[in-house]
Length: 529
Image 1 (spheres, rainbow, N blue to C red):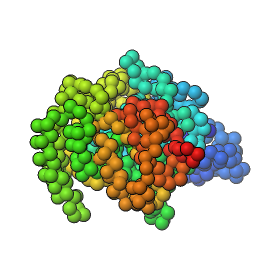
Image 2 (image 1 turned 135 degrees about the horizontal axis):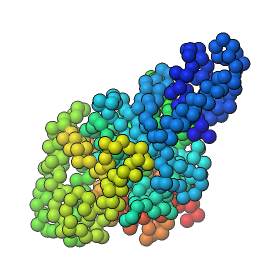
Image 3 (image 1 turned 45 degrees about the horizontal axis):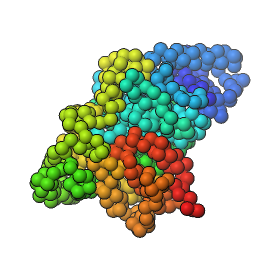
């Protein structure tokens, strides 16, 4: 039904030129309302100009719908506008024969949405791929998934583990552990510059989060039926910086809306929870525990001479972080200097050990050389002319699984040298749930550093989190869970024993079960156990 809603809403915005008077255009708006249950509202007998009939208006409306249907079919671009809301760029299509749903009628939608400040001369456009849930998509919870990096494409999440298909050696294969069975999934190339997103770059997580809020408000105008649904944020790696900032901006704007001070035309976003895997969220915990992992927890990674050299550097690194974080104002030069100092700790000789999965060896060089094969295949797959055409990508726009320009901007700003985990404190206090699920075989964003900053989050759940034991789930060989709160928890930590940095790709069946439990707020461990 909501596809009809979208078509009608676009029709009344794109085809008003077919109605010669302002009065008739007002009638069109009033008689094609946005909400699904209102679609069938009949035109009043006295609507229109000079006594024109209801049938005449209906024919005009059908004509508008046909125009928009043709636009959708031909993948044309339109400027979406709504009364008292600024117009914005939107180019949306339904990809054919790429990652189709495994079961049910679900389809997907992909395209670009222009952000505040976007123009043809100076574009600023985020790309998304929205996969409908296979069951009850109109009411299903919606998960927004973003990449890491910074500058890593959010499309890698559905193509590595979450979506209806996976990138394989010769194309794609069906994913039996897809999250889209019961949940809507929006994969977002975030920030601008990642994946297919293009235009003016940002250089920090806060500005990027403001862009996401802008994107979501426009997304909900294009897919208004989803605005009522439960909303969950998902990310990992550098997403550990992104997620708390995105959640903070959403919560701030929701609070402003409730006080009558929000953005004109904005809708409340039903942010229910956050799911974060193997994150970097706090520079102090990240670097402070890195050498513990690489010198002692992982045999044959950093040798004795490397460890001695880097342990000597560690106090300087930590002091530079403290110096950068002094005072309320951000000092980009101090943050960038601290990042440069501490970078030496993570760039020691690993002797072939893959930091994303310490069980593996790889002696190749290059930023993607030792990543899962799907990363190497992604650039070639998404840059195929047929794939770009199906996704509605302009010919001039190319896909980058990891954009070095974004990395450079964030590094110059020193974005990594922050304590983003502290942003969780007011969110948890407001009842927004938080789960971290972490692969134990990761030496990039290793579990000791993650658990360290989780213990330091001052929230209503801190004391209980500190004294709660880790419980095997579903077996001692699989994972342990630490849950504080009812159901799946308000603050939950899961250590996946056989998972690495890309834990959902390493343990897809287990992670799908984790996500199902979390989103549905079902206890991981029954009270009888």
